[in-house]
Image 1 (cartoon, rainbow, N blue to C red):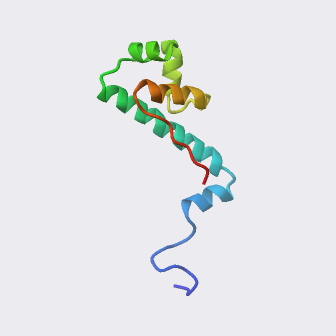
Image 2: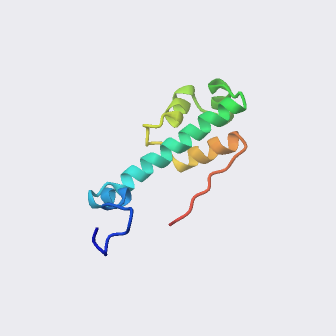
Length: 97
């Protein structure tokens, strides 16, 4: 092993790989959306909130709620995510890193 390679580590990090391919931001955005959709679904299940009830709380349609909960749909706005979080007694926390 060469002296300039960190012991126990081979090659670049996955983040570096994604950045090199120019897709880091896209992948990170998708990952965040999927995590939020998963968290909302889990909270709804934990609190026994049906989709009909959640749509009512958000004053929206079930179709729109399905788009919100779809981890592959990236067209959901920050405002909608914030409203959904508030509807289940939570809040969205964002930071610039």
